[in-house]
Structure formats: structure tokens, C-alpha cells
Length: 113
Image (cartoon, rainbow, N blue to C red; front, side, top):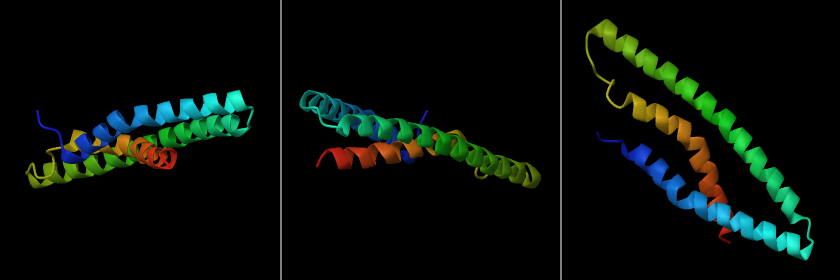
């Protein structure tokens, strides 16, 4: 089974950058707790907010992708062709992963400075 390049890109982004973001955030939280600064709770709040907004955006993107793939399937059924049917599951998976990947890449860039 072959996966689309977009799906592999999103998976690779999450696979390699997410652990880096997590370790950077944990180091920052540990440093802020030892120094007594107030940056830790703000970062925790940002993490929670990002995850909730990514989950909502992902659900909306999957719903839109499913509607789009349904329209492609109906069109293919009506015309008697299979054009556009290949890769439907990959396109839905990419739609689900894109919101998370976008945030992970932004956090990796922000925390690497």
C-alpha cells in the first residue's frame, strides 16, 4: 500500500518535531519552576488552548473532507467512472493531521530560538 506524499509529510512532521517541542517545553517548565518565574503557567495554558483548538479544527477539516469525498463519489457513480476515488482515505487523513502539524511546526520554530 502506498501513501500520498502529503500524508507522509504530515506524519514525518509530527514524528520528528513533536518530541522536540515536548522536550523544549518541559525544559522551559522546569527552568521556570526552579527560578520562580511566571512563564510556566502561561505556557501550560497555551499548550491546552492549542490542543483544544487543533482538535476542533481537525474535526471540522475531517467533516469537510468527508463531504468533498462524498461529492466525488457521487459524481463518479453518476458518470460511471472511478476518477478521483483513489487516495480518498489519504486526503481525509491529511485533513485530520494538518491542524496538529501546523501547530507543531510553529511551536518547533518558536521554541528553537
